[in-house]
Amino acid sequence: MRFIIETTGKAARSAYLWIMAAMCALSCTEAPTGQTPTNSTPPPPLENVQAEPMPGGAKISYRLPNQTDISYVKGEFMFQGKPKTVRASVYENSLTVEGLGSVEPIEITLWLVNHSEILSPPTVTSFTPLTPPVHAISASAELRPDFGGINVRWKNPDGIEIGVFLYSQKDDGEYDNGAFTFSQAKEGEYVFRGFRDTLRTFRLQITDKWGNLSEMKEVTLTPLFEKLLDRTRHGQRALPWDNTSSQGGQNFSFLFDGVKTSTGNVSWHTQENQPLDQKGFTVPTMFTIDLGVEASLSRLILWQGRWAEWFLYGHHNPRLFEVWGIKELPTGKPDDYWKDDWKDDWILLSDCEMKKPSNSAMGTNTNEDVAQANAGHEFYTKLATVRYIRFSVKATWTGNKDNNVTIQEIEFWGNDNPGL
Image (tube, rainbow, N blue to C red; front, side, top):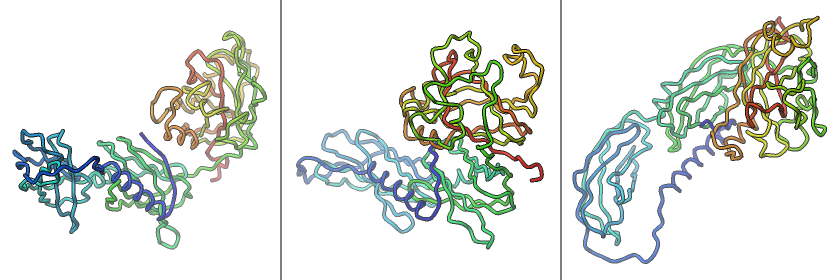
């Protein structure tokens, strides 16, 4: 899972840490119910206590006594001068300590507690946690130049919830307040954009829901140049076998009107209920865009058609499609050339698959799915100078026999000035 939320400022970072801490507290607190029983007899101590170190903590296993008047297991220890308490249900034979941000010896005292809150005799054991996850994740991070920014990749084998902070050095030598993204991905990747193509120093830091922070990872690099191409110059270039239809006034021009996440008649939607063998309605569905300028493309972003919210990851939205490009259109070709043979002359810029973050069933969209749809689906393209872009939609979310398509908006990024 990759839940992408990017913002800036110390307030945003504080909000992240506060929310994570609150979630942890809510998940770990159990309120007693009913009348508290009274029994002054302490339960027997835990037996066969063993501690197995883990990253940022330990799993402490034990044997429970054979009696019914027991409620839970409690452990207490000191960490960096502060007392910590953990609890475990008696329906399990282990207690987990987690969220420790450094490697230092820990001595923990364990008690078995009965229904009257009477403690057993204490049992003491010790452990030294393994390297905390935030440090291991930070050590695995790779930072590389990307178009308009920096690409960050990391490994998070346990899939813990983390925040990835990126700070960039300003012209005065100071660092900005940082931008961040949330993630639980085991193989994480994110691109922080919005930077000029000038040499600068970046710093990366990882945090978790317990507020632990990794050391700063520093790199100096130059982001790659790109710009958003002028959408007012884009338009339709109707070629034979293209689907140029529209349903209910949902026109092709809506692809470039700047409206990305609204519902209603604001997307391009082709005419439905047309025969599969009719010209323009065969599978794959094809359509062509004239960028209005020659440009070396770096990527494109596509927003799903959403006449209503349930359209997302469904209906006729593209799922598998190819993006082709060419600088000048061939002339003097018969109509049949534009059905299959045209690919011999065009450049395959990208073979795309639109992915749903949650992988949930069609019709069920999580907050993460909607957030990704709102941000748009990004696809890198082969670096080639082109003017005409032809899409070949092999399958929509409805299936690979769907001869319709709906798209809300498309943005093209690259360089339309060879001198830059």
